[in-house]
Length: 395
Ligand SMILES: Cc1ncc(COP(=O)(O)O)c(C=O)c1O
Image 1 (tube, protein in one colour):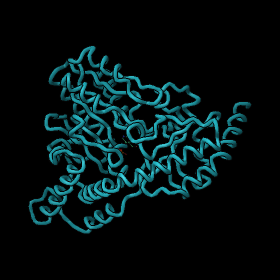
Image 2 (image 1 turned 90 degrees about the vertical axis):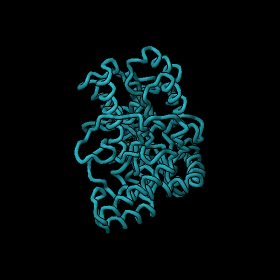
Image 3 (image 1 turned 30 degrees about the vertical axis):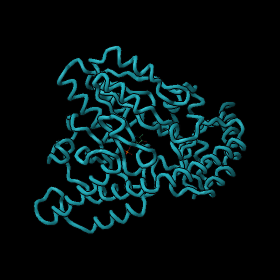
Image 4 (image 1 turned 180 degrees about the vertical axis):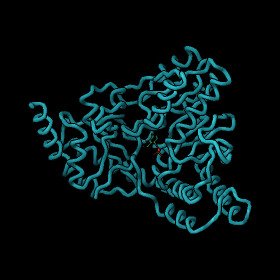
């Protein structure tokens, strides 16, 4: 099997499995006062400290959640509610059109259910936020903005955003600024304190921890209204019994991912360069989407995202799957119908191109054989998908 869908989820690292397995054999609710409870609490707090040290933040700034989607929902809804309650004028959220649905959809919900207003700042053809447009959007009426949210790195095309510049502009106007760093943490050099951000979402299963756990890094100055009420865990922002095995697994996974980051990125970038060169050689009209620069200041190390003219991305995905190659179109499928990628549309692609894309994402266990398998299979797959496409157009 050739697994090239690490951006969807990456194999859990052995260190994370060991930490989880050890915790699953223990008993104790981290909120209980007795010995087993205190032991569980100690594991949670040690995990919190180790995650905080890895990310350059204070332990008390980490709010554990059930993943990136929940962290994004908590920050968007929670801060919107808090801000618009304190000052009814603050109803605007400034974001981009290339965010993950885990950010776009709660923001969309806020517009429909709560009267939020949204500004989506444009991106250029490489998927990078237009900083001038961003500043102009903020400056238009900074007093009515509840939150700025711009992702650290895009999950489809891998574009790394100028997050520090964005944070600096937002802070000039004293507007809270959040980033969805689900694709970045464990992969890029993320120094949250230096970046000047107020809130950062991340998710364990993207860097080698278990699925279903993540966190919101939340500055002490932000006080979002909770989505979940109950036992008052996690600064009263996120109630619910803490998932000690998953939290321990996430901490161990992050530590291991950060320790191997430079060596792994160098290896993965070499493999990715060979993949890009090979795909372009076999399919000369394949278009590499996202930044041309293949370095981690511009693009996620494992990301290679192509459009293949005349093909449906889904057809290609299934043809490659039949050859044992797992990759992704990167875009959503709604009611069984392939949707054009909202990210490619925002980057200026037409609808047909935005449906003809495939994302290969490499990770820590990727190897030369994986790249060879894609280079061998992609030519015939594109030919068949093109033939199927033109037959469908004739009917
Ligand atoms: C950029 C981004 N944000 C949020 C999410 C959602 O995270 P989770 O799967 O932990 O809910 C993903 C997952 O694909 C993502 O890529």
